[in-house]
Length: 80
Length: 80
Image 1 (cartoon, helix red, strand yellow):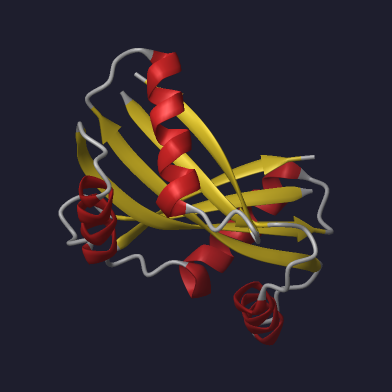
Image 2 (cartoon, helix red, strand yellow):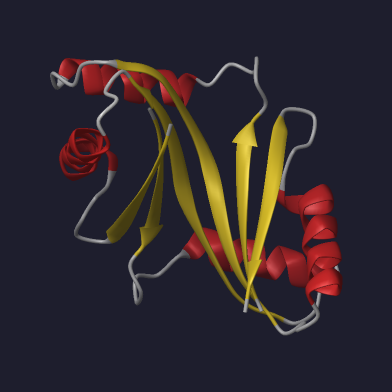
């Protein structure tokens, strides 16, 4: 089973990297970009084939290691 | 219009950050994780409302700034 995890900063948490990208895009002449936020995406190959158990396992990975839940949200997508 | 861009390393390009995450997960006792790859996700708010033009604009941003197309792939998802 494959898992894709999106880890993004919570709303209200300052995102200097996103701001820098926004300024760089503006400097290159791209207009109409009002907000830029950067996050991480992690792709996992899991041996687990049951979706509920896989989701629970990935949730535990996010809570313990992958995401800093004080400032970050995570979203888990599973596919076969 | 909102755009979500996934930037991931091409197959075959070494991903030390992904490897480090894999080892850390193993160290925490998570089993059955055979591969880990880490990438970036960038969320943009665009003033453009036409989907074709927005896609073309974001594609240009990826080619010129956001992705290093020698070693990275990018995928663009648009939503209203």
